[in-house]
Amino acid sequence: MGLTEWAYSLSESLLSDPLPRRWAHSLGVAKRARSLAPILGSDAELLEAAAVLHDIGYSPAIATTGFHPLDGARFLRDQEGADERVVRLVAHHSCALLEAEERGLRQELEDEFELERPDLVDALLYSDMTTTPDGTQTTPAERLDEIVQRYGPDTIVGRFIQRAAPEIYAAAKRVDGRLVQASADSQPM
View 1 (cartoon, rainbow, N blue to C red):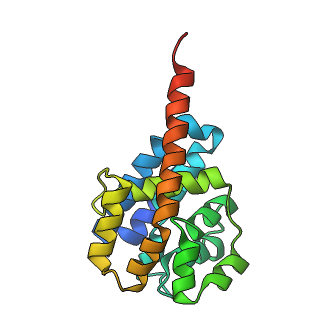
View 2 (view 1 turned 135 degrees about the vertical axis):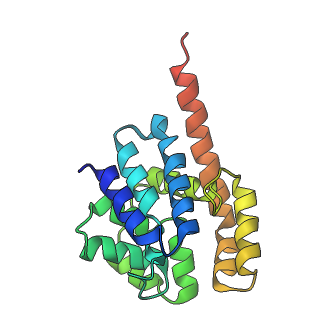
């Protein structure tokens, strides 16, 4: 079984029944990640696998700390023996260090999981922040607004996402720039 096939199967087994909307979102994030293949080269499969797995830490079957990046990454590392790069991407997806800080878990996250390459961190962040909870495409601004509305501006998630907004916009700009450049590079002269 290939990396992405395994990742889809595992994510579906953990999310589809208990959290169907989270599963739809994960499928949408993976689809968005797949669309970034022109700028990912040999890491396209790796990113797609991390994208479909990024929210498995919400699964009641594996949630322990209540912080889904940490719970998901620990499960992938400890129970699944997953590819270390996939584990790192799940652990640090979508500015997780900032949310970990809000939860008093930043040191744990930093101590247990190294950061992955910045361009891949950007690509996963972009994929997540341009996908609605139902799995459809959106803009980073609409996604941020939706998160703040859903959780409330004064909650842990609301505070964290507002703090993360500048980095989310910057990552989206970097990925969009890479996509434009890749498109220009592929045009015949």
